[in-house]
Structure formats: C-alpha cells, structure tokens
Length: 264
Length: 264
DNA sequence: TCAAAAGTGTTATGATTACACCCATGG
DNA sequence: CCATGGGTGTAATCATAACACTTTTGA
Image (tube, rainbow over all chains, first blue to last red; front, side):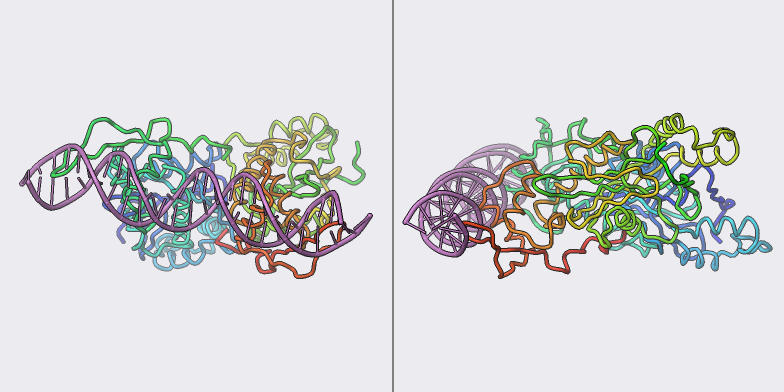
C-alpha cells in the first residue's frame, strides 16, 4: 500500500449533495495538447478527472476555479462550463466496489460495508451524482501539477493517449474537446493555452493541433487578425537566419472574460 | 384565498436535493413567439417557470421531459439543456419570505417558522438551489396548458410581454432565447414549433419572428432547402388566387433527436 | 549573397445577396 | 385574363482560398 498518511474520510457536510464539478484541464506545448489527470492513491490503477463537491456558500464557477487552482497552482484560470451529465445510472458503484475489493483496509478489519459509519459513507458515495463539466485552458509552463490528498500522482497526458479513467470521465474529455473546437472560429480564448506573448506561427500550430488540420499561412494570419482580439507588440523576436516575427498578446481585459458572464 | 384543495407540502424525500430543473416552454403561432408560464396558487402575484426536482432514479433529461409533459399534455417534446446557474446567492429566500408574509396560513395559526416541521421545510427551501435550464419547442396547437397542483393558472405569454417572475426566471428565458437563436443557422430543430406540415412561407415567418429581422424570399428558400433536413410532400396546398405552395415536414427520425445524444 | 521564413498583396474560387422572370390559381 | 404570390434562375457582390512576391535575418 503506497499511502503514508491516513486516508481522509470525505464528509457530506457543508457540500451540496449529489453534485460534483469535473474539470478537464487543458495544457499545450510543442504541438501537443494535454490534459492534467491525477491517479488515485488507492491500490489498483484508478485515474479520475480533478473533481470535487460544491460548498454551500460557493458559486459553482468558483468551485471549478478552486478545484483547478488546487491542481495547477495558478490563481485565476480561464474556464468554461460545457455540459451537465445526469443519467440515473451514473454512479460510482462499479468503481467503488472494485476500489474496496482492492483496498479492504479502507473500511477497517472489523468494520464491514454493512456496519455503521462505513455503510453510511459508502451509501453516500454510491448514490447517483450529477456532474457539471468545466474545462480550463492553462499555460503549461506556469502550471505546477499538484496532488490532492487523494492522489498518488498527477501528470499531463497527451489528449490522444489518455489513461482509462473511472466512470464516464473519458467521454467527458471528448465532449470538452468538442466544445473547445466549436469556439475556435470566433473567439481567441484558446490562446490562454499559450504563454503571455507568442508569435503568429505558434498560434497557427496551436490551431492545427487542436483541429488536426493544416492552414495556409497567409490566410491564417489574416483570419486571426481580423478578429481584432490581439495586440501586436512592436518589439520583435530574435531567432536566427530569417525575418523576425512580431509578438502578440491577448489584451488584459479579455484574458479573464468568461468568469463573470451571465448567471452561472 | 383562492385555494380550494389543501396545499401540498413538498418533501425532500426521493429527490436530489438542492437541484432543480427550470423549463422554458416555447410556443409559436401567427408570427408570435410565446412562453408557457404558470401563476402560483398563493396570495400575491407570483409567476414562476415550470420547475421541479429530479427523482433519485431519473435521468435529468427525463425529469425535464416529465415536467414539460405535465404542463403541455404532449408525451414527447423536443428539448435542449442550455445552461446551469449556480450562484451561491441564488436562493428563493426573498420570494419565500414574501410568500409567507402574504400566506400566513401556509405555516398554520399555531406553528411558526421557528418551530418543528415548519422550520425544517422552510430551511430546505431557503437553501441555495442549482438550476439546470431546459427549453422545449412545442406545437401550440397540440399543447393543452395544464396547471400543476401548485398553480392558480397557466398561460401563454408573448416573449416580449412576460410577467415578472420569481428569482432569476426572467433572465433564464432571455438566455434560452439567445441559445435558441444560436442554432437557427445550422439546424431545423426550431421547426418543432410548427404543426407537422407547413409551407416555406410559414418557416420564413417563424425565422423572422425569432430573429426579428426580414429575409429575402428566394434566398431563404434556398438556404433552408440546402440544409437537406426537410421532406417535400408532393401534395399541394389549396388556398386561393395563386400558385399553391408545397408542404414540408421534418422527417420522423429527426424529430426526436437531441434526447438521446451524448451523456446528459 | 543565399536560404529560410515572415509579412503582405493579388488573383481565383465559392458562397451569399439582390433581383427578375415565369407559372399556377381563383376571381 | 388579370392580380397575387410561389418556385426558380441569373447576375452582382462579398468572403474565403490559393498562390506569389518581397523583405528581413544570420550564416
């Protein structure tokens, strides 16, 4: 058993019951789109999206922000709510049964799942959960992956090589990617995946990676600039052996848009 | 007091707590877009969107379907989930305080809000609720507005002349309309607002009403037909004094799409 | 001075818009 | 046989795509 500290017992107190926030944290570097996925601290290979409950006195957007902050170390993250899943048969029973089978010490040598506190906790977790999905776009260079007390490890996984996750978490990532792609045409929010300043070539590579198709260089530049969402910095880049490209950045006020919109 | 039957007491049992489904039921007739809004059976003028909790063994989509069915009498309705609102300060306290002020008999002459059962019920309702918004598109000719046991009346209101509703329900309608408009370009789902068969002119009038702008007749026809989502019926219309228009209909399999997609 | 890649311009293509023409229908 | 409105065709306009030309940079 790899655990070194006592395993925390989750209480239903102070949380909205049967409601979770599941977060898909996207990162990008070198033509590779990744998702930050923790592995749980229990025996058996359990991967699960960063996920938590909502405090009674907390906005759901704020809860998502808190969850993402705790895993990336970044105070304010760009995020979008993208779906709610609430199938009646969506519960963690299959996962929990296997978890307990492999981790009998969880309920102690004498206590069984049928007795007292153990049973109560177990029942709380095996009820159906409604899940609100959020995705975040973070700068992989700034993010410092952090385990929660429930994690054994946490890592960036290429979007095409995700580990098998519990419940419907793989499907949630697929949906998040789909929703991310939908907005690419009209918004520049996706540039929150890049460092603060970047060249047009980097933008193009990002788009090509996410949409998995090539763009024509000249037209791409015109398209992006026509959205009027970028500031061109007059200083130039110093690389080697050719004309230096301009650097661009998202204007400050735009960076955090999306948090405070409408009445989530 | 207009009530004739005892007012029902809602119990938290069997429902997912602190989660509601709020429904915007759209109807359309004669260049007028309407929303079906019930008025509550209590003293004071309280209007509220059709809304209910989710049973423990029920999909959230199914819950929305049930709520809409109970108000329209239509078994299967076209519906879309469009947002989740979950601000921490989103509770019905202001509404409930006023409701109780005007309806003292709700808690009985002896019981007070501070005692026993009354207090427990009251606390349940004044906690914050997370609301999942759904909109439905129904054929106003088929729908038979039905009161629930909580309603004094239920009526179609022109989208531009909605009554003031409790909490953030007016804002929810605004958001629903916005989301409905977004899809108009690429999908024909909106035609679920029309009777089973319709002419192209009726389609155009519907679009013009929802988007509040005129379209050129010839181009509109080409645009809609280019979506390849309509069946042209070979029989023609009999009106008067001019060429008879074709009738169209949505093909059956398309009609109910949207219920079973993805993992809501 | 040359290769590489960046910035920008120019033409070709396709989609959308504006408009016109003809036809069915009932009075 | 005329007025009305429906179906469809054609030309003009706009947006996008394909491609080319020029410039900057370090070797």
